Image (cartoon, rainbow, N blue to C red; front, side):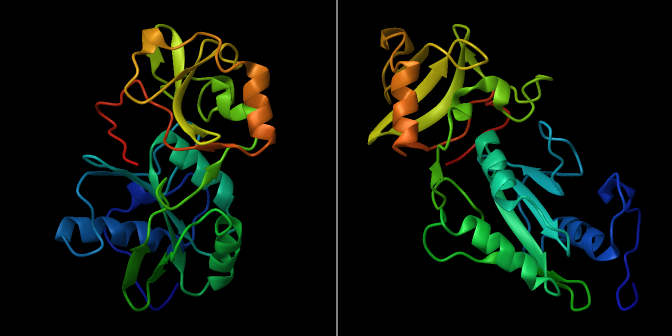
Length: 249
């Protein structure tokens, strides 16, 4: 493309497939802002085109207290809602950043996410010709209502990266820690003993794991709450490496 230049060693920013200069520029510029400490930049380790579970974010930032997932969009359609929910489940906040020449994608993303987004929200924008880069507001559990839509939310085998162990789901006495949920107005951390999701245990905030009743809620009871739209995910699946990958609500 004419009108702007991408210089330096940029191989580490490239995706495996074909990639436009407009898309590549966003990642390169984001990294240079971090090196120069020019906004927008974040404290933490930047990694580009590295696999997280079974997805490959354009960039993720492993930070102290907060991990960020950053996606640049320059004309190609994206599974905005599915990818946002996957990233939140894995413990990231999500930034969607759009090339200013492709506002139709921004409209598509807003249409996909806005039913669950709460309050004013700004997407990020970038323009290589004018050196513009903003990352906008992150999607987090504070501003996104993560309604549970099926029992797959309680099946570890259905989680992104489970089959090859890349999801790193934490265990407590051999039970999978699925994260914190709102069950018809009650906050509970849900555990299950089987990859297919069976024999659940609901632990209240501050309650000892050993004192929670095994087999409560029942699978049928939990499914009825899901069918009645009474279950909301409040935080990510707990990871085995949670001390290293600190996550934030």
